[in-house]
Length: 543
Ligand SMILES: Nc1ncnc2c1ncn2[C@@H]1O[C@H](COS(=O)(=O)NC(=O)c2csc(-c3nc4ccc(O)cc4s3)n2)[C@@H](O)[C@H]1O
Image 1: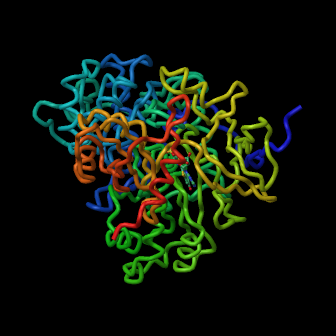
Image 2: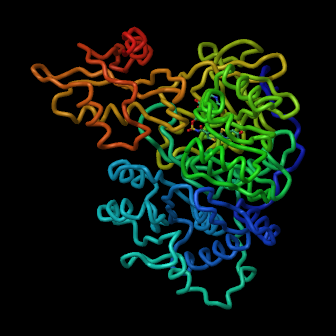
Image 3: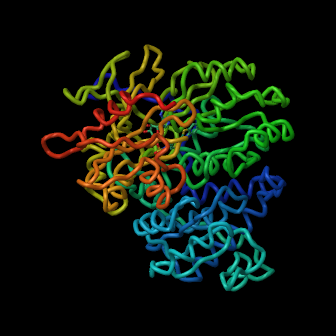
């Protein structure tokens, strides 16, 4: 007998297709091979077609296999949003070789720590990320090969894709001579993505091929998919190396969409792109929604092509959602909610019942519940608790980290999100707080433990606690409480500069630094993060 108050996703309008994500993507790329535009770089207007992605990814698959990799290896990809980003990703998925993506904005220290989790044998890098990759490779013996994904020529002896594949496939190569491997999609690792989860340092989230194929069902769904008509344009501003950008974009290939890509947010270019490409759908993180709600620039462009705005990855204020819908003359804003640990969105506002402020309803093949952690019971409508999910879409666990896995997925297979929320009588969910310590700045994860460890390495710092302070544009700004060693002095800027020199820009201490006599801790020495937040809440507003 199933416990009560379990919220099931709607009856699926489509089955989970058989086979691996690699096989389904291969079939889709072949099916849409006549489409001239798969990804367009809106900065340069460079284009890659479905046929080009199909051929290059098949050549890479043959070459990676003949180079000697197998399912016990990992393929690494480190690049900014790039029209060539998915070629090695698809190749590895065809072969059943796990893919691990890295943020191209990482510092050497961050990337070294990150790569030591998944230990990739081959790193596929953009030109821009190449200096970073070559620096960290010097200390990482498991990286045997680096290949540049977006150059026609080798760079200082580092092979480009054309050189790499020419060694194993000649001009007579026929992509149809290659077929993706057969394996159990439930068992085979598709990707290892970075997330700090509910606590501690960034970990490797293990997602199976089944996770992706369930996402593909959602993307084909007319009620929950962003677009389902092939060659419809969609403007994506989410990073491909992050789960949000990775799994939405892979699922766009399954539907045959035209992905208009931006590498980073620049207001005027963003608006000009919508106008010039007559974009009907945009997928953005909440900070861009604040821009759309408030920027005077918006009135200077013809955005009449926009019929759908989708967002997610961080909280979106109801007032911002209403302001954007009103300004762009839309019936409502499509909001999705997901975790790296759930692969992609597990809740999305249904197009035929958009409820402003809600992060949506559980999707097909997803079960959700609101858990009262005190009683272990699933709560009813309107009652607040921790939102949990059960589905074949959720992660298999954290890579080589059984303890962190057990802390997140319970014995009944429920994934504990670390988010506090409720659902209404119609099953629309609302996120109201975060139980976990994770900070999200502009949709990017900031693990307090990572910054605390760095702060404690400073010779003048005796103790530190990091939290997120609310911010209209960024969502949360990383901020630190610092206890100085006796007799030592530091300014706020010195502490901020110390951190800024070691981490990617999204982790900088934009929320400030407060010097305190002690860090609030419980009897077991565990940080009391609620009290950290209160220290900043009581801080006088900056002039
Ligand atoms: N909509 C939301 N509202 C409030 N909070 C949200 C949220 N989405 C993620 N979060 C927060 O980010 C945390 C997870 O962060 S994370 O690990 O970096 N992962 C993510 O943020 C993540 C992974 S996939 C994904 C999305 N996929 C989508 C597909 C279609 C669509 O229309 C919208 C979305 S959002 N988001 C959550 O636990 C929660 O705290």
